[in-house]
Length: 488
Picture 1 (cartoon, rainbow, N blue to C red):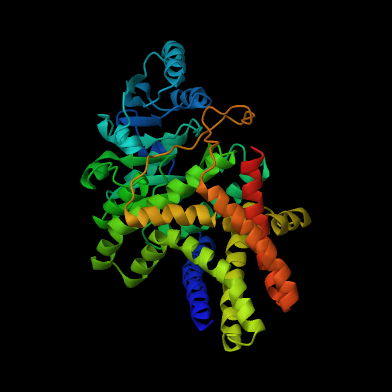
Picture 2: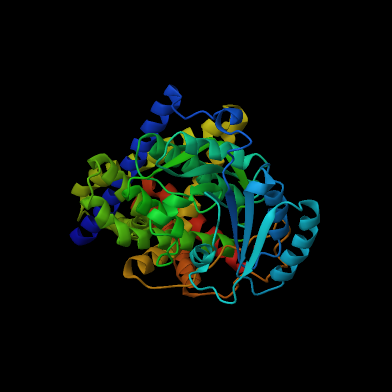
């Protein structure tokens, strides 16, 4: 039982250390928001004259996006920018009727915008996936804007973001904040928007303003072409090419900028299969980038604070291992306390668990109320949304642990893009959804039953403080299993 106790405490200790990095970011968020350090937008007419607008290439990496590609093209062609300085590259790897939809749409847009230079580039294979498509395209722009298929940039997006590049010669990229077209569509999209808002509101803002490394999010941003080239270009040896390039250029002295005031609407995955494929890619990719760059970060001349935050950033995939281990062992830990074998460790376990919970609660409550006005309605909304978010995180922990393990072991997998549906009813649109049940589903079902039994054992053993935790685990795995069983 002592081995179980120490494994449980080690897992909880790891989560606690990661939580401390989040607490530090929260401190910086409050500090810089109070100081209003966020760089304000420059007036456009103070930056550009009609003679010095830089050439901009807009790249649209696309793969089988029949439901959303027309919306994307409409938005990009409507960008408010001199047409003779704008190049649009449609990088299409599609194998379905998306090709036909794009070509038909382009014939219409060419009539509406005759002065815009566009290229339709279709590859017959997906070598390098998204990174390969962008690396193969020969862009002529000094700056390169990137939009995934589910994004809908506002007309003034380029004018706002390009202004920042004239503040610093070593600025590699500008990342903007994602907003959500369908954030309230379902409980699943609400939970994801809750998580993404915290990432952009606190993590990206704090890392940027404190001078720590942070990442371009793959879309809704603009890169300086020279920085991409200096960093070694787009590489496909990880499935998060955006995180990989972000670290490469920052290690070479370039800076990234995140602006909280510029937003870009996007569609959140509305199907559980789509959400899990996105989570898999982000989690596995982060692990791959950690293997690739973490050692270089520690060998660099960067500050100890930056190295600590970069380590927490790149190893965030490992948190799911700790969640799985600690949640499974918590039942046996309770049993050890019940029989009197590990009672001496109870106080430490309680302290670690309580510390983690209150840090996470504080982190997400600050993020939430930064975006919402404080009211009885918003308080009630948060009190419901926060435990549901925790439950969903627990429910996806087995799936994400498997993704992280593959990343750390160097197991190569296909770049599985996230299906989007333009907020239409996807339940009868199975074209892009993998409905095949893999072993992960049965593992999630087994864990649902495991923690259901754990709740009963908590009552029998008098471990009443653990009942809420095990109930959240039941709810999380139950929710994920039900969505996959009843096809949303």
